[in-house]
Length: 235
Image (tube, rainbow, N blue to C red):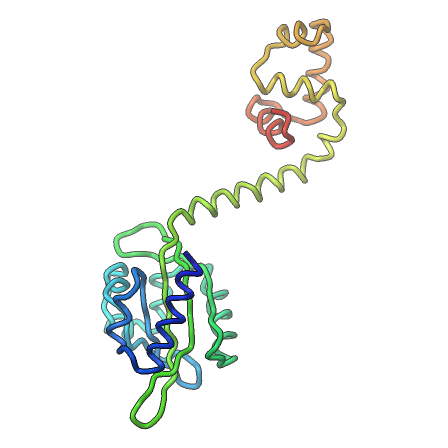
């Protein structure tokens, strides 16, 4: 999807440069938000165009976007991400390279939604022909990324799991092979009597192992034991 959006923007910018289409035309070519920002010295000074797709999803108008000024970003974008986005776009614009583009992921608050929606945004400097020469513009294409919230949740879970493993690895390394075996059986719901029978050891021996396990890994509940077992692939 991302490479397709990149190619669409590249083709649109070429057509605009050659004068083969006008601003209102290209906004209907892609199912995404299309914005054209005016520039002065490669700094955005206003929005001269947003297609209907984008305006409808934000529940706004072009006049309102320009009236909001800087608060436009605070209204629709996650405040925690704004600094990184501004820095990235600022670095891109400072280069003034019309052959390059700047891509990033961002979260957008759509009209009527309480949660943010993930978007993939592609920015590119373009030059539009005028009677007295050319003018520079910044075109932005933003497309919703379906399932990105689930991806982020999985990544966060993986990072949390990694932190848990690093925090508890010393405890895991101190376990004997027999203790690891018993943890696996306990995590699978086996009782002490069932473990004794399966491992051909005395019930008293199982109880001793269980006390040593609790002391070593400091898991006081079954939920804690299960998490430990899953983190170290014992189940």
